[in-house]
Amino acid sequence: MMEIYIPSILLPLISFITVYISTPYISKRLEEKNIVGIDLHKKGGLKIPTAGGIALLLGFTSALTLAGILDLDAKALMLVYITATLACLLGLLDDLLTLSKKTLVLFSILIGTPFLTYHKGSTFVTLTPFGPQDLGIAFWPLALLGVAFLANSVNIYAGFNGLEAGLGLITSTSLAISATLYGSKESAITLSTLAASLLAFLKYNYYPAKTFIGNSGTYMTGA
Image (cartoon, rainbow, N blue to C red; front, side, top):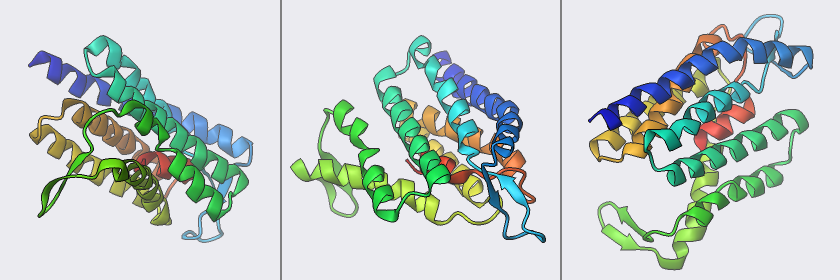
């Protein structure tokens, strides 16, 4: 039991503390570099530091680096680690360079390529109400499109203070509970670690926001 409970508490705790401490520092540096966005929902159009997803990535990946010493499936967590990093980098590029929609879609699909590299399991999926179905070769392109869809779906509903991080917190917490009930230890720990990161970030992103999550954070959360 201890091998389940220790990572379930330790990793989210590390993630929470890292994001909570690093966000003000990162926000200050972003403001100094004029990496800011206009808050359209406040009088005067205040300039708010954006790309706060950097702090989320720092906290999330810092916690996942402990996977190897906590007897978790390091291979599965490395997949999450790489995918989250690629998604955050794509969002950061968009924050800085304002990429075209076509470029974003293309690179969003490529974010899922680590999944193809590491996944060598079954191509069966459960499609309610049809039960388990073998998608065969169609599984692979659908997996790539699935990652791209999830990354962009979070990015699309951005716009209000605390909305992206708040909904991400609700979603990741719900999925963590579901993963726990299904006995998927690594998934539960990964999702609870993400939830802890988002909870800490909400301290600075909830209205009135002191920093924006940016595309770096929305893409990472979705992926």
